[in-house]
Image 1 (cartoon, rainbow, N blue to C red):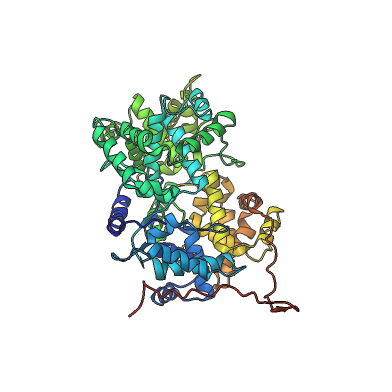
Image 2 (image 1 turned 60 degrees about the vertical axis):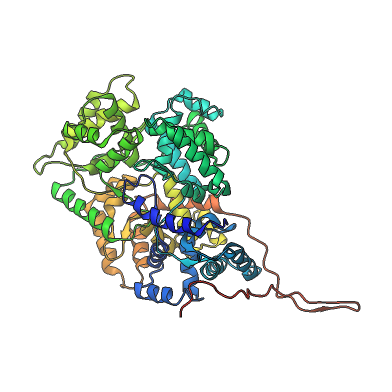
Length: 593
């Protein structure tokens, strides 16, 4: 926990929200209160009750402990087993300008508050209260959300595909030969932009975001800042990828693990190419009526704007196209020209289209078009009933032997653009990758605090009758954007995620309607559980996915807590064992007058 100068804390507080207003790439910014209210949705706690808890300084009650544990897990500032992630947690609190002891005082509070065999929920709550009372005032700013290990893999994996790094270069990466490779500077630049570690508008390296991500205190030293300033001064002012490369080579490579992370991902791609989530279902293009498409377009925009974000992404095609423009340093005026001219067949446009399709999951190398994702971005005419077959025929006829992935993706896009329908600018639900689904399920298991013995049952395929399963599936559906309170089950989002055509049949909708009609109107988790059991378990792979994640999480159970110690008297000595005393440090922050 670094004693960061207070003015820097307030400056970062002001910087964070402004960066959210641009292209968001693979970046998340949220405030503590947003996480808290998302967890309120998971546990079905009314907003008025959440307001009361906040006003009363998050009192020590079982429901509040659950909410705080869930909030810290969601914000990546707490990890069950290792405790507080100081480089993340500190972002949510502002120490006083004259306070130089807040960090040590907070650590002392945490150490003195722990009791043997406290649950993860209790430990997280106590740690939060120590920050709340000893570190600083809880701020309302949106803070950078670090990636999990799996999300870092997704970030690097997708960036490698976007840049179209060739196989022989991946082999070199996997052998630790990276810095002098032809595509490495471009790859690093894309990773830094997509991950929120560099902002192109003001040509700024986000050292605080790198610190939040990796926690190395050297990232916040004056020496590192001076190195960054020197690299900026020496830059020729042309390509920003060269500037980011200079930052990395001169200032960062020894204090952040990017080379090791890229090497690991490259090894998995060059030796055993990453296989996306299995698509066991037919990829038949469903002929959805145009009226329904426009309705879904309006619904998507409403959901994106009027609900808590959770782990859900909604974007339109143009956003992805312009994000890729940033990666390849194409000016906005040039991008505008490409759009006006219907994305002409030029090398730069091919790269941009391939990048955009990879970004939203509409294209997978080795598989091709993901039809149930790509089709969301196009609206067929109301009288057109042949668009799907016509588009498939176009794609088949346009392919040439030895076409590259970039060329194949561009040709497929042009077939959709000319044969399937008009390109829309609606916000569309973006499906999770296989690794992101694992992150979604892991975080939901942690938020619900599923006990180890129940995880063992999940890993053995025993799930539906378990005590926490209904709550777990509810949290997964909420966090993943497959269910919204008050708006119901989103079969279209599930279809975009998994591609099973039965998700869009009248029979499935009738099953959902029947489950809704039979619901008692009390706990929404019971309704979502009924949807899964009655309508979805055979046409979505949730049970298998949860089983896989549970298998990876199952651990040897800890030894049982010893019984409370009692005085033990012998003929020579008397020994009394007692737990450490509670913290006696007076609170310094978030004190009501």
